[in-house]
Amino acid sequence: MSQDCFRHITTLPWPDRSLDLSPIKHIWDHLGWQAGQPTSLVELETRLQQPVERDVSGYHTNLYDSMFARIASCIRARGSPTEF
Image (cartoon, rainbow, N blue to C red):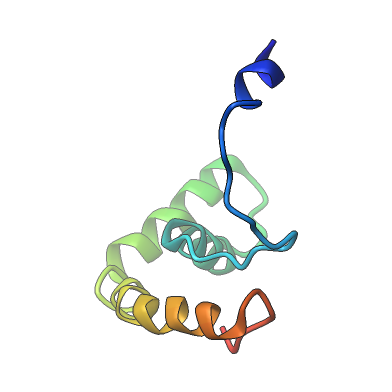
């Protein structure tokens, strides 16, 4: 039934391996990298809270400021890999 609903929707061409331009995914990746490999749920929670509290203006600001360049790079590359 859901497939039938989508038959009348026009989609844009999109590369099979679309580049990730979602800032929130980059932030989650950064937090995961900083969290390392905790041995318990409590340790994971503690590690994830610490970077958020001290890194709000650092990594996140740089990521936000780089989004225009990331988008422009993706457009120039026409689906090929970019420097990001």
